[in-house]
Length: 376
Image (cartoon, rainbow, N blue to C red; front, side, top):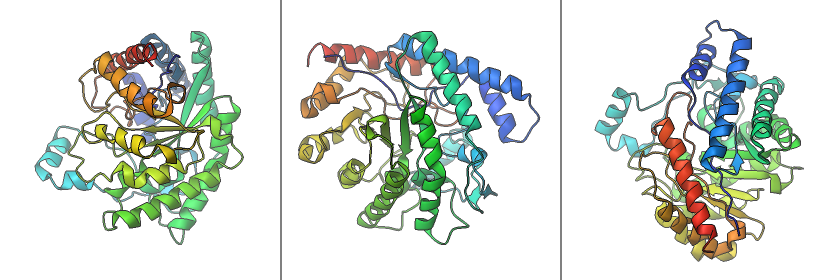
């Protein structure tokens, strides 16, 4: 039995790519043809390096995107101005650390406009370029499986807040309708679709701090309903969903327990579930999957994060193999894919992990998967 490897999606971008992205972000003049050429070349190299590291199911590294959620402001109408900036509650509890992060450039800066009008697609042209770049890179490396990230309705509502629709339900419904074509375009291209859903966990201590855990779980359920609506007609076998508590090094003492959002997560219309299980705040939660095994649908494939994405420690392959084996023991090796806790380049030009170390960690992930494959 060979245990496959993947990761959450974003990878470090080269400086020329970052320069192009921020020139566009700031509204500065740039050569569109040179921009496209840079994205094509960088995506090809990103795919090559994933294959070199031993990753089986690759992505484009989200090369052309400013971030995994706010890219939608460039591809959809209805966004302008700026949204309130809410620091996670755990960082507010340690103001000296939060100030140090700001002073050290440890918090990314990028536009987060409000929703001030009807959300409608501007067309799938930018997405089609990303798809073409990824598929060309895959073909050059002989890779069969690739995935592309897309923002979920819930995470868009987290970062690009509503100032147009009458309530959250209406905003989520509008986002679900608007994002549907993007999701279908990715799947129709022969790629797997990954929905990034930190709204199911991160937003608890970032936007909904005034709610109880039980009240928040109801909100998260509303987000899953909107996502499932957008996914209607798409084969769940082609869909991955990633839950996250925030891809930053910090205390994370306000993170809601996996046990409390477990049922909500399992209700997503997807085959692959990606989640954190390596960082010091969530590594113990593999036991939730063990203890609630009966509640894991038979068609679900677990993709635990077996390397952390906020530290420059490179995990020993034996530790990675141990982490993989835990989940293989719960649902069987055929229903486990080894992944990462989160992305390594969630925001363009920003990442806690050195780019070369990021690929070394992917290499450790792959080596750990090979060790585990020989044991399960």
